[in-house]
Length: 343
Image (cartoon, rainbow, N blue to C red; front, side, top):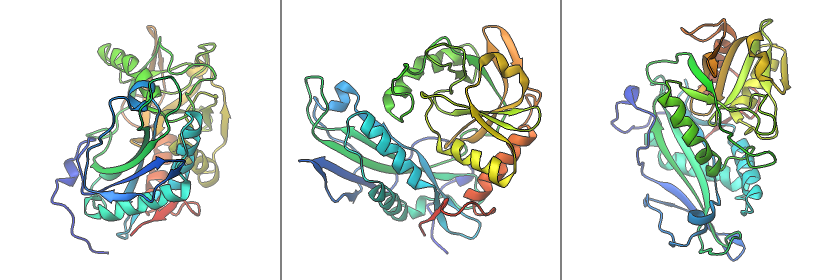
């Protein structure tokens, strides 16, 4: 498939926002979603009293479109993003945007911006950001009556420029989520909660935070933007389990890759902070970076170093990374239905 691309320095793109040609918009009014349209207007106009501005009714998703080795443009498991966004919306008393329409909107926006999809081998991808917010005026504390669903795309380079280096992470003194709260959904309010902890960690020279469970502060949860994954000394995968961890689509996919493709033992269970010394490798995973190695966790001065070291990915995490990115780029055959071909 031959297509004229935008004249960009694809190999040197950063991970940032670049306006593209079209975005998708649909409005919920009088109890129903309208048909939705593609628009060139990149700006949102809302009332000063819109519910999003006062009571934070907002949910979002993140996924990518890729150019495969054979030249097709594809996305990776968009049905799971659609379902997760519906789950997030229900938790915040927002009307779910139907999953079938979500996937169709992904197709429409990516096709309309096909010239912005980075070429195969460039290391870049097209990031897709669906989001939904309360748009009608709300002054009393209650759900809004009207909502807007939008989706834009932007070409991005690798999340970690210059190659992936193992991270140094600190155990945070802050909680990312409340017990029985909203930690398990993808809402902007959760990320706002993590920003002060993120800035504080950076000021102390750390790359990220390790948030602990909010009830007992003894078990590992996530970083705030990515899920953890551990490799034990026998090469098995151990994934932290908790009701306040966001169910990462990348992590769920890596679980299948590990168990069904690589034949590794996979455990999903609560992981105590006190047992980190027992693991050989640690990684954080999410849409942006796929999986990134962690070389060291610092718990208030106590250093927990993984034997995989601070120079490169450990062997098991490297296999996971290579296999999943291979599936996404069309180099490796994955489970049926994972790759959604658009063009």
